[in-house]
Image 1 (cartoon, rainbow, N blue to C red):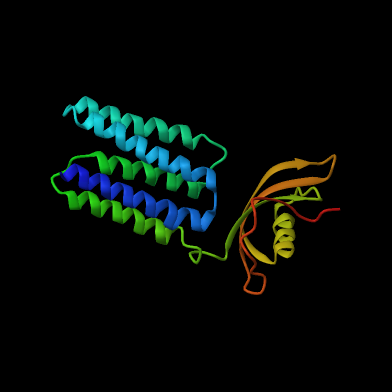
Image 2: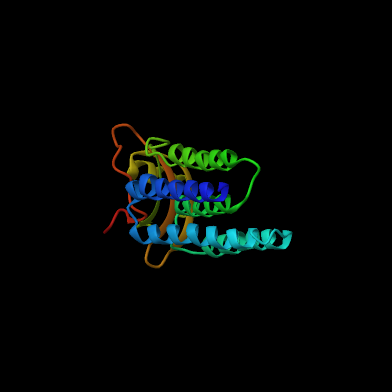
Length: 199
């Protein structure tokens, strides 16, 4: 009976995670089915392995957790916040499958995951801080001049700049920049790639 309660906790938790937190905030439909599939798949496999009452079965379940995590971490299609949701979906599935001495302990851990994601991925948390990849129409070999140009262009304080590509022939510089916008320049969160200073 306690296992059925854990299953119910997992289903409720993953529904809240995906439809209450992830999709309303990020609106990426393709990952909804991925998170649901991963959670229910891990729940089913880990439950079957746990039912054997062997350490090998539990170890295999944890190995599955690690392998799936590594595969998704190598994907170039996921942002870091999406990787975090992926891990949460996996963790919820494993917590729902494990038999513990207290059902409420597993339920509390699931609730803790949801609370952490609610606050950690909240739009108001560090909302002034941005990250963009910019293509500039000048070749900057001087780091100080590059930072000054970016601060003037973005009307922001630049905290970190990484030059990804410097093309002296076509006079372009591709940079990965992390910055904080000023109050007067605050705009909606920009997209990922962008072109700045187009000719």
